[in-house]
Picture 1 (spheres, one colour):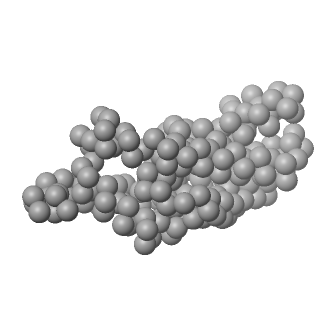
Picture 2 (cartoon, rainbow, N blue to C red):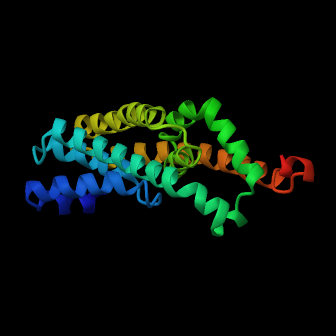
Amino acid sequence: MSQALAFLATLPGWAVYLLLGAGAAVENLLPPIPADTFVVVAGLLASQGVVDPWAAGLLTWGANVAGALVVFHMGDRYGRGFFENGAGRWVLRPGQLRRIEAFYARWGTWAVFFARFLPGLRAVVPAFAGISHQGFWRTAIPVAVASGIWYGGLLWLGTVAGRNLPAVEDWLQGANRTLLAVALVLALLIGWWWWRTRHPDDEEEAS
């Protein structure tokens, strides 16, 4: 993070904002890229007067929400066809898709909300909200609220911490390790569910 901070501090203002926004958005397409780091860096840069804190906060939040909604739209438009007629039919069977759709019909809003705090699942859950045709506002509102809470807190942390970069890095690494552990447990449960429902009986599959 220190190298990224030093690099961004040398760029003109418009380039800094562009990179911060791109970094916050691209996590929705490439989950290994941590938007959290970009948001904390935005706060650190704001504490040094390189960027305006409100502008940086709104930019990173808006870019992250927009990226999630792009993923949602892609799932809504192309997801069912991919899993019903494309290569995805080898991953999810029709009965599994129906179960996922039923889950989102009941719990989709809360699933999207809590997933925004968990690495990796942030990108997957909005995609399946689209595949399940959950609806734009039932997806957009929890994405916007959860991202606002999480990234607003991270921006505040970076701004308040100021130049105490090692402390910020330690806290962020610890928080992400905890959240990643939670995400891995949920991923294992999802994997168990996938395997258990992979071979439904003929009657269920035909329904």
